[in-house]
Structure formats: C-alpha cells, structure tokens
Image 1 (tube, rainbow, N blue to C red):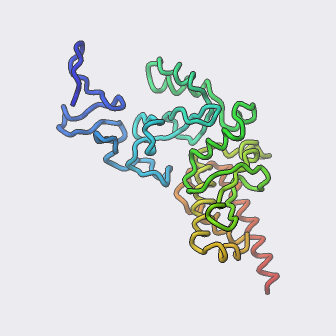
Image 2 (cartoon, rainbow, N blue to C red):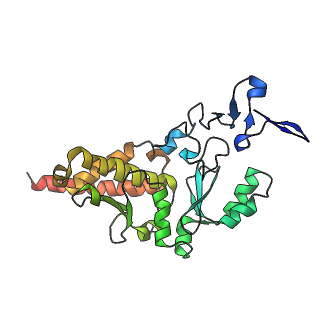
Image 3 (cartoon, rainbow, N blue to C red):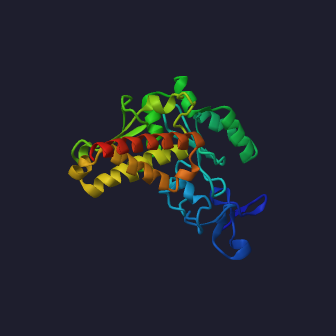
Length: 279
C-alpha cells in the first residue's frame, strides 16, 4: 500500500521508483512505462524486445537478476562492468555495447537529475570492452568473467588463445571435461576489418547459439562416438546454420554477420571438395 509522507501526503512511487496503480485503477501493479509489473516483481506482459534476449523469460525483471541490475523502463539491457569483470550497471541504450567503468563513476552519476544525464555521464567516463583490454584496464581473467556473465550454455569457459576461432566447444570424452574455450586475444583485438567480439548480441549468437545450441546440443543428441565420427566441417556447417536460424542472429552487427558468412562459405567449399574426393 502507498506509504504516508509527513510533508507531501501519500507516496505512490514505491518499488523501483515506479508508480503504484492501486489508488487510481484498483489494480496492485506498478507502471514501468513499457509494461506493468506485479507486486512480486514479475511483468504482466511480454518484453517488447524479448527476441533480442533469447533464453531469458520475457516476463522476468532485470533478466532474472534484480540484485545486480536495474530496469529503467521494462525494455532494454546494455551493460557496464568494472575492471575485475563484475557487473555494475544497465542503462537504456539498446545497442548491445559492453563498456568498462567503475563503481565510483556509477556513484558519482547518482546525483544527476534524469536517467538521460546519468547514462550520458557514465558513458562519457567509460571505455569499450575491447579498448579496456587494449589499454590493460581489464586483464584476461576479468575479461573471461564478462563472457561468463552471458554464458547460458551450461558449460564452463576456459581461456585458450591458441584456438583458431572466438569460442570452441571441446569434447574430451566425458561430461566432466566438456567445456568451451575462449580466445580472449582474438575476441578483443581488432582484426583487419576492425572487428572485435565485444557486443552482447554478437557474443550471445556466437557463444550460446553456435557453441551451445549448435555443437553442445548436437553432442548430447548423438553421443560422444557418433558426434566424433562427424567430419569437422559437417559439425561446423550445422552449428552455423543453427546460429543463423537463431532469433539472436538478426540483432548481430553487420561485421559479425559478414565474418560468419565468410566462414560458412569456407566450410561449404571444404565439404564440396571432400564430396568430390569420395566419388
């Protein structure tokens, strides 16, 4: 129920600073702008941008992490981390960018008047994920924690800068040794086209769609022996097809799509070459 304030009467702005609707419409919901929210923190309608966050319930508040995250208007997720890889803040700029900031910057921004001023201040005093790595603001172990934050494959992540790709599903023979290797250097060092894997949508598609729903699901479907018998190019082609059919694909960046399509083309050429040899 709305609380009493000695100076201003009833205070209708309660949980999360959202306006409680019971005094006006006799419904125990909060107005979160894009959606209404119940008193237990669950949204009563679908996230209007739920396709961008495949794997997260479209009714969840703050991606199911209300302790560490703040949802300003019930719609968007863009993340800031500190130099140790710990999550700090979510703003309302829906571009998938990841930036590195500090708790001090977030605290300083709290004195500003509007969400727009807060977000602008934090953005101006933060650096992109890959730039922070380039400047040694964030090290490899901390960068791995950022990738782990987005990992919903069910597998642990390990640093391995010797693999050829960004991520690589590793099958060592039993469930205790299954993992996904991460090439931190490749991911956060710009290639000839200036591309880095530091955008949430690109990470989600590469890690969760390609490695998780592609390779790992196929491994579970076929079992270790049958999966291992598949040619490497067949496994890659099927995983790429999985990620391109995934809802996250359409939100990935242009450079990311171009890189995936080039890789897909190379795997198709390898397959055709091997098909010719087998005739």
